[in-house]
Image (cartoon, rainbow, N blue to C red; front, side):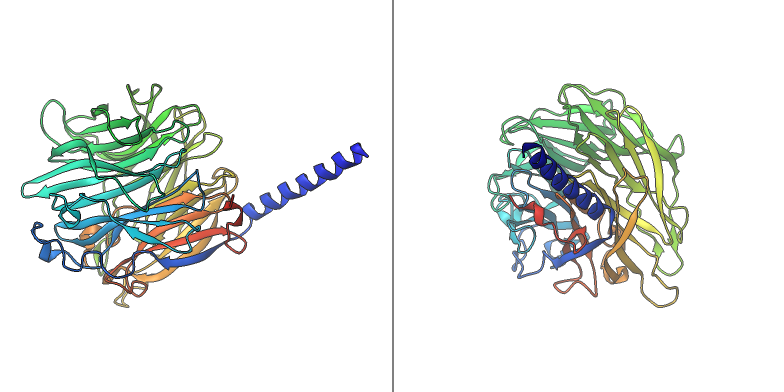
Length: 470
């Protein structure tokens, strides 16, 4: 009897495993596509006293990031720039869901800008990440625009993103503080990490990549620590920090090297929780410093902000733009299975110009990537037609299967082409069996202003992620 029982249990487990594998390998579908930024303005009177506040565009949202709370997988948090104009945005907003993305509640960070009781004219480059203990962290910019002095700030939430502490200054207001990203530790209670670039010509600490750490859930942060300094004619931008299973910190970033004449991506490692950093190694190919031009609408979006993710087995991934022309698109991909020491690269090709990839890995190790591309754009029709696409791989990027997520949308209707129409980055986070995506869409999808931030749940079969309940 006992042997037969063990055989029955073993057979059931085997069948379950095979069904899970088949689901991850099969087609993915989109569920619960909705605009999470829509609704009455949180700033109906604007921000009186803010620098050039009259130029801010109500309902113009850009640049979104998203995270899933590992302590409660039904808790999803997104952030974005709100009311963007020529002189940046009024504020950054946060939206949180406690039911797996079905319903959302928007909130502000008190004191981040003049809109919420602070002194800053603007906020930008928002990022969110949840730590393993359930603390949700926010990182971003907050600054004055006359003169242009920007601080790197952080905040935290202990209730799943519903309410937030006032911002803590991680790096003081300087010319050139840019592209911050925050990462909560998956294993160390109260630990989180913030990385950013500083574009400055103040010798000797110029054009640097910086790091700071909190060990008390965001109440205080360490003084900035140098990750990398590439030289006088090079810039490190858009760092993204991963925490590997063995505790290694891995910062991936883009570099523009004017002296060498190319751009590339790099990875820097820390073995002591960010106190010191090893010299970076190049990740993926060298990329030409060229812009691509649409025959009707001019320069195409190409912010060159990479996206990075780590799998449960410790494999690190990075995704980046790798187009060969204005009509031939590609998303570059690289991965490392030895803690960031060595990397292999490939390209996900498509029949249209592609930009702003976001990469994530779910709990089963399935790799997902979202991006925009112009495969459905038709010359001469007066529209700049883009769609959002998703691809997943269940064999660590050896093969991919694509799914249409949203669109067609008309980028031309977005009011600021110089902001890449949809900002500089979008968001993707892994669920247990699927993915949570956040991205920007203009008309005809946007109904509450010129753009809206959309959420989509992407998963196998019917697109559901029912196993994300506990």
